[in-house]
Length: 135
Image (tube, rainbow, N blue to C red):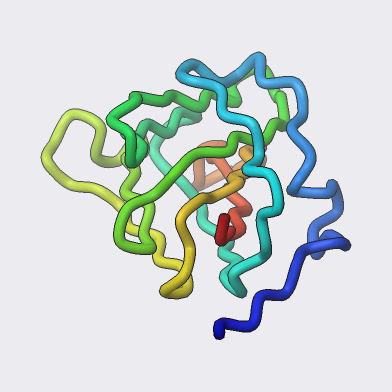
């Protein structure tokens, strides 16, 4: 039998397992799966080239996260093959994509999106904190 460790505390400043105001999210809203467990995968990504991230979840639903209004929000969605494929401003018009992988028992992700300020030589960008869930 597989040992599962349930997530009771957050490793992030805002508990990532709590859905927040999703004003910057367009797409299907999923509730966090009942009885979910932390699968051991946490990632931090920077989406550059704009303040928008797009992806299609494992059920074929399209999502857009936009942090241009300085919002911070979390989105729960199913994934395939323990990975999340997403596009940011650097590759929205082209064929490229970004891949975020999780442990091999991950079937859901909770991703928290927030705006980060750039610098004199770097534009503002999207910070993505994500956790893989088994559920």
